[in-house]
Each structure stands twice: as C-alpha cells, then as structure tokens.
Image (cartoon, rainbow, N blue to C red; front, side):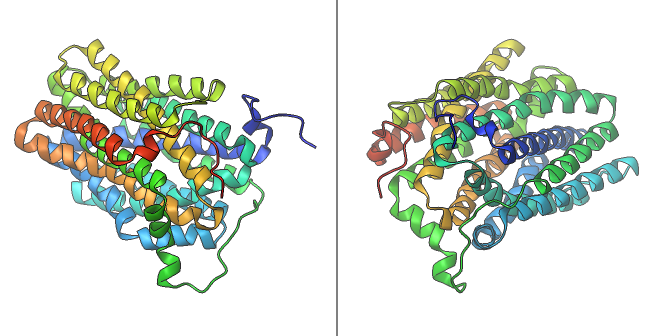
Length: 411
C-alpha cells in the first residue's frame, strides 16, 4: 500500500512509467524548440518576409483543425502509448528531412512547408494522446502534481531549447537539426519502454455521435468551455513568437543567440511559476488566478511590443511566460479532472486545436498583421486584445471565475 500523499512534492515521480513519460516529453519539447528557432531563423534569412514567418505556424496548425474529428477518437480507441511512440518516430523523420535539405543546400520555402505539414499531422495525433496518457500513469490524487511537473518539463525545454537552438544554429543549422533528431529518437524509445497502462478504450461502433462526443461534452461543461476558449482568444491575439526574428534582428539588433534569448525568456518566467506550483499548488481562488494570469499576459505583450531595450524586452517576455503558466496550469488541471477518461482523447483533441489555434494560428495572425502594419503595432494591438478578452470572459463565464479549488467535481 502506498505511503505517500497528494501533498508529496515529488509524488508523480514515484511512478516509474510517469518518470519515463516526463523525460520523453522533455526531450521532445526540447527538440521542437530547437527546430522552431532554426526554421524561423532560416526562413527569415532566406526570404526576409514576415508573412512567411506567419505561414510556418499556419502549416503546422491546419492538420490539427482538419483532423480534429479523427485524432481524438483514435486516442480514445487505441493504445495511447503506441500512438505517441509512432508520432515521435514521424517527428524524427521530419527532423531528418530538414537536416537533409540543409546539408544539400535545398532550403526552399515550399519544401519546408511540406515538411512542417507532416510535422503538424504527427502533432495533431500526438497531442490528444500525450495529454490523455499522463492521467493513465498516475492515480488521481497525484494528477495535479503530475500536471505541474509536466508544465515545468515543457517550460524548462522552452528555456534551454531556444538558447541551445540559437547557439547550435550559430555553429551550423546541421548541428541544430542533428541534435533535434537525436532527442526525438530518444523520446520515442522512452515511450516504448513504458508498460501498457490501464485505459478506458471505446467499445461502441464508431458513429457521428461518438466522434462528436468531445464537442458535446465541452459545450455542456461551461467550466471547460470557458477555460479552453479563454486561452484560445487570449494567445491568438497576444502571441508574438513568430515575430521574434524581426525583433531580434531589426529592432533589438541581435543575432541568432539573441533570438534564442528572447525565445527562452517566456520559459524562464514560466518554469519559475511551474516549480512554485509543483511545491505550492493553488488551493483557493483558482478561477481568479486564471483571469489575472491572462490579463498580465496581455500587459506583458504590450510592454514587449513597445520596448527598444533588450533587457526590458526580456523582462516583459518573462512576465508573459509566468502569467501564461498560471493560466495553463489551471486550465489543464480542470480539463484533466473534469473530463471522464472515456472521452478524454476527444476532448483533448478539441483542446489541442484550440491551443494550436492560439499558438500557430496566432503566429499567422501576427505575421500577416506585421506584413501590413509593422511588427510593433501587430504586437501591441494583440496585447490590448488579450486584456479585452480577459475582461469579457470574466463576465461571460462567472462559474469559471468563481472556481475556488482544483478538485474533481462531484458527479
């Protein structure tokens, strides 16, 4: 019988399967950050176009949107561990393809967009599976702890990955893509080593009713709907990641290492908050914390857009990461605890499309606005929009705003 409690700060790591999962997710996230920095810098070097930077996000997002009715059902009906392993293998192939294009000096936008589309397809399938797998690896009492450590894993990779990507790209693009390929391969191997976990797989005949169960659940559960949609519109408007090559090279006059620093800054703020949440979880006023986090994210975005100082920009980005981490932690915990396991994959598929829309589609929004109005107005207008979203959603979803503790609801 287990002797540790839900208050044990490292409770999730006492489960060997979760420890492997955590390490795998860190390596995969690290590789994604390296690829993101490298592709963005290469694309801007080759084209000098803000629009092309935005298209990087669009091509990665569209598969999640187009496959939303499939990916969640697959995660609910089949072994999530196997799905994640296959997807990581496909991701490694995409990294290898980018490496080959670079070695052959064939870095052409349409070829890169084709590879990123495949990369987007594997992420579309992996997202719901990986989000749904974690709750299968730990008991419910340790789930909030696992989610906090999951977030710290991603954010730590978000700190180290961009800096490493910038440094590696400074050496050569070949070095950057080679490291990313190695990390994705190791991540896949660790997932394969996880024993098959318990999972409530679907047994009913596939029908439109079953496929749409995730949408139906979210529509009925206003807390989950409010949490997902708040993140969608806040980050869709406030995202500035796609424009960082412009700020790094043209506004702040930095090189690839400087771009890595800017990309890492949100992660520094986020991982600090994530570690605090792992040791000192939110126990009261969770909903209010979520809305305050979104508002601070918008304010940080405005400061970053207006800043002409490297260190003020870094501080603003750290604030953005720290405040976004609060919102992400509350949202992911609510979704995990409020969603039954038998529909978790389909709900997470919808959630991943919303997250993808807020990130990749947000990058497209920023890129297109920057191509018309300039990078600074695109970021500042987006930050103001995020502040407006926080205020509107606080009024529209009072049940979400009034949530006190992050506990499973009574059913």
